[in-house]
Length: 93
Image (cartoon, rainbow, N blue to C red; front, side, top):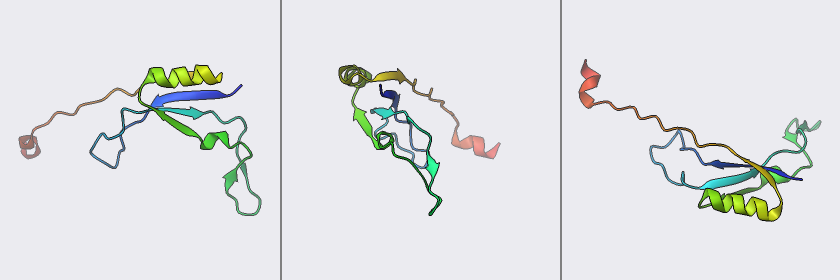
């Protein structure tokens, strides 16, 4: 049985906007550990399900898809937003 992880996309640290952070992603857990390739040294494996990422508009839609396809899943809660409130005048204290 495939195991999936459902999570909400985090905000990109390199951008100030919050675009596409409302999407819920379904991502499969790797079945086997990745092995280094002896020739190139790159990590890889025979499991291609770790390349699949599905996006859903709501958490309920992601759960419904996982249940319909027979996947075991767990939901990773969204990180709590931390607001750092400061005024421009605080730069000169």
